[in-house]
Image 1: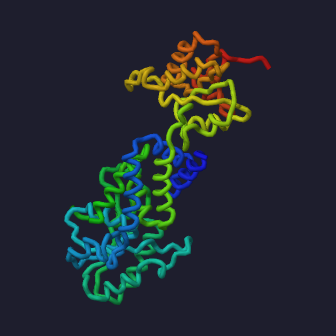
Image 2: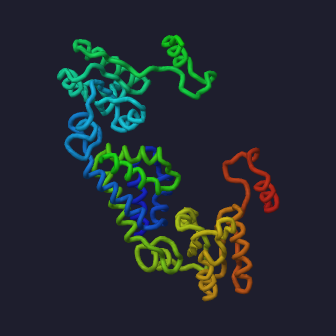
Image 3: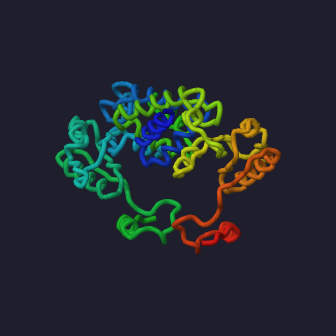
Length: 195
Length: 195
């Protein structure tokens, strides 16, 4: 009887990303063993966040109202296009970057049956068409899907009077050149700058 | 505003074992992105399990009533002593082992300021004293704390007419002898058996 409920708890933890049976079991037994306050707080915060956080009708990021705090208060002619809502918080760490955001909710990925119509490109087109932006910075990941999506967006926005840019690629700060892969290194050479 | 709630969600996920800020952030964003049903199920199951699962008054394992299903239905004169409630499900996987359990809720560990009075040894003494058992199998981990606890229990139960046993140590099934550590190998030699 108690085993059924424990198994149900283990199963429900397995919806978390990268959590298999063993990890879920560890979480479940920990939750049963530790103090009630923290556990109740976890459950109630999940419920509260899930019921009150939706998507901003403008940028598509997470939001508790119709329009998120960035879209409703910030003014900028630079639009940063990201793949997921979490990437907004990543870009917000960049000091001195004052931009608005547009979340695609995915990238073009033919292998996963995800075409241009499955991500928020129509909304991007509308926002750019309104003439509010001078530059669109495509900040998708430097992988195949991210690159393909960036290329697609640059072609899509050709007819408009906006500059379409991409995050620079090169060697990471603090890394060792010896371990940089060839593609990264050759892009770093291509994009070399005078000092 | 939405960021505060997301940060609160991230923070509450960090009560899970081995979950730091990055993993908690990944869980939080996943929870916000995925379908409501699974997430609500997770939260409600946590609340249900936490409120309805307590400890069995006999063995100390997890239980939804006063006495758990094993203690209330099984009859055995073999008592298996384990460290944590989850170890009951580990031992239950052993085919043909028909035993009752006693959960210590920890091991003796002077480094963590955990002495004999901090684990359920008094209850163990009472159960053994009642004369219900012929043998006490100490199934704590083969580490320093587990060994010390096993030694302590064996001395504690000296005055009683019970056999105190310990899980055998040796090389694991399917492992390569080459990679067995010296302590394991020397214990496997000590405990060698005629075939």
